[in-house]
Length: 288
Image (cartoon, helix red, strand yellow):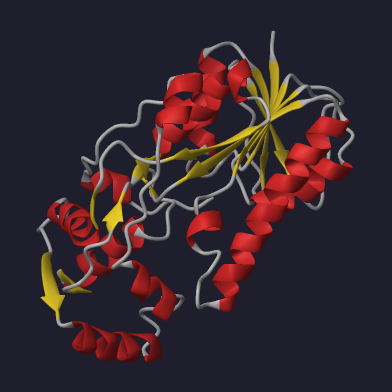
């Protein structure tokens, strides 16, 4: 029997990965911040990357579906013997590296350092690490972009974007990411490499948003405003607490094409993401 240790196991990617591992006969130690009941094939460990009790001494693979920087520091100090590591980061490392927002630049730097530390630690331990960088995640109700858009539109029955929100996006379903992590475990060509994981369709930001709004019952209407008017409305929304965390850098990115190549992942572990065909159930918010 093969054994895995999964961090972020109750999150949007982790819980989908657990299902695959158990179905294929793996025994899994799964880490969650909340207390959970063990089920066949899964032993839940309560804790976070600062403190976890009951860790196994040896596993066949460690998969991190949570914050990369925190996992990298844990891994550098861990005493769990393991020959294989899969860790999720984000394309934000590339997209936000030159952001006008200092917090976004800091995030990109932490992601870069996390990748470096994971690869370096794996090398010193004669282990094989693979890093996965998703684009905009959706599908499991745990994302902070499309699920948030759906919630706002559901409440007000409408949603607004600037007319120039035409930058290209590649939303990726959480289940496709879980499948990618599972497939990479036994893919030797992926050892020591990092992969961008875009979704299977490229479309504009406003078309992406329109598809989300069309799933709601009743469907919400999308309004396209002149950019100056939208910026003014956004300023009022921030004051009202509706648009917290949505700054000028995020607004500017709506005009930018954020497109990545899935060819290396397709070649090395058969990555095959689906096109963007959202349903209302994909945007039902779920907590850890």
